[in-house]
Image (cartoon, rainbow, N blue to C red; front, side):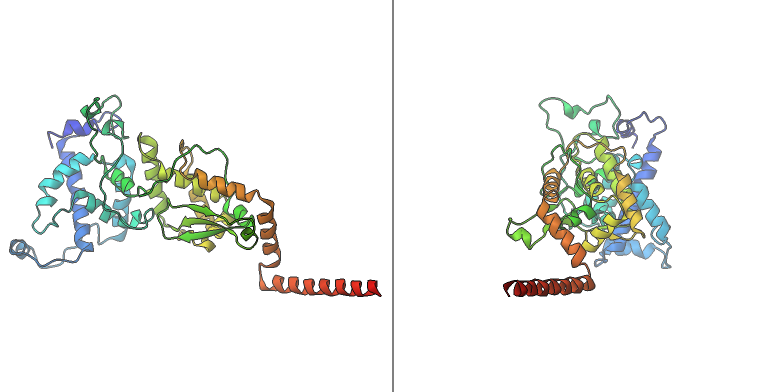
Length: 377
């Protein structure tokens, strides 16, 4: 670690004078021990080898209380702290320690990289953004010199012309962000016009549909003029479960996208999309009924506040849902869908209003029939 101290110092935006090899060892080994213990807890034990038997026989038989995983609050607190952008440890330090510690443990899964341990540990949070886990560990992100952890003015030698830029990770949050990268990314465009909220679109005849895809698979579809009279437009958005940790998870991914040049702002675009859809508790109610949001925060207003505060002081140049939003805006401005939605809300919202509408329609028909008969006489 003495050989890595200077390189580690270059990975921070400000000069770090108190960083030394002891801090790198203690912090790095704590993270690796945490990841490996979590892996052992969540994976069934394989048949022990002779070498591993010799080690386990020397260990005490009584059950040892784990100070992190046996205390729910401690486990959640540590997991949240490792997500904070300001708490990231340079990944090059973790990799060096990994290869001389966890990678050499007897019975260690072959070809199980540090990437896999990180994704496994944060799997409950990454499932918020991806419908299924991916195993790709490649990235198109920026170099360390361009990243938020990098000291201004210092650039790596690989930035020189003619030298290929290596694909590598720079901290744990970078791994999580790359893991959530959509497999089929949408096209980013500049977006100006604000989209109506979920309740306004619902009033205009748009039907929201919750799907099981990743959050970046957003789709707006509507039928032809004739079919539009009988079928509503569909706004398909993947289901998002809102927990106490959701805001912290999304906020740090957004901060990473804001601070690191070259990183695609998919999470920021998604936050802007939801911020436009959710302006009040009424909007949350509409999305909940459609299965787009599963609110475990409590009141609908809490969910509304989460999205309204998520994009404060956030800048976005390329919005990856611009085409979808433009389609929704154009549809909401049409007269016929709005008129049909108004009739549905007023006369078909409940069985009683539907019965009253039918009775009124029958009475009206009888009145017209009697008028025609009297007129013909």
